[in-house]
Image (cartoon, rainbow, N blue to C red; front, side):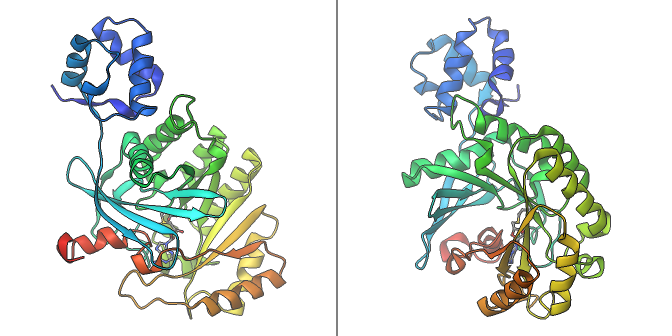
Length: 348
Ligand code: SAH
């Protein structure tokens, strides 16, 4: 029998699963608490569960457990990057950022990525598989256990495209905000997407209260097609329509991510285009100097960002420069995992 991933079930689904063992209903609540409150990774530790049931659980299910393969602490910023090894031997990255208002955790949603953005290292070695809800949660549980820090907010901005793994991401968000366990308000969650339009509409309907971050990086189709292949499928006009819908439906301000790339998207013309594009949308723009994650030669200085920020602010846009946390530890998406395919782990 193929074992099932027990920590990915909601309490209702877990209760339905445990019916097969003819146990009382309160048992599923107890098991759920062991998994998400006490966060055990072995059925043997579930001390208030009868041994006979623990044995049956162990035969039918497994508990997803991720292990630290590498930990890199930034020397300049209060940032720690974890390379986690999944049970099947794949690797993902998680970044703990100590922001002024509490610890924020950047988690991965897929192993690899199929979106192919030209500046991003996440998809360099291709797409391997989606993460299960429990593997997204484990990044929080394991980082808290290891660091002793309490994670106060979560950003889905690590490896992968969360809306390309829609159902698991939604299940993860439900587990994250459930009263037993992390019990996190989804107002403390940001989900970043490269712009999968049908899923933005689907997400709007759910009205989860999270912040939607849209990776824009260019104001017109010609430029965005060059940087982000997804734009050939869903162009800027379709994307903007879905963003407006999301903002109207949820009452939430959209956050646009814009990686400044010198000579590529930071001219006066780019600023004017961006101002026109975003006028009338309840939004905020985050600028970030492109991190040289790949060998395609993209770069930008802090000054490039500041200059572009002045151009946009003059036009009345709500814009900030995102702190480039952990540049010295390859904290940009997929950089650390990417290195695994170039050098053995021990040499890193
Ligand atoms: N797939 C999602 C989330 C992961 S990427 C998305 O595309 O939004 C998180 C953010 O980092 C995105 O805005 C992405 O465009 C940006 N990013 C990726 N590589 C980068 C790099 N080398 N420099 C600056 N930003 C980068």
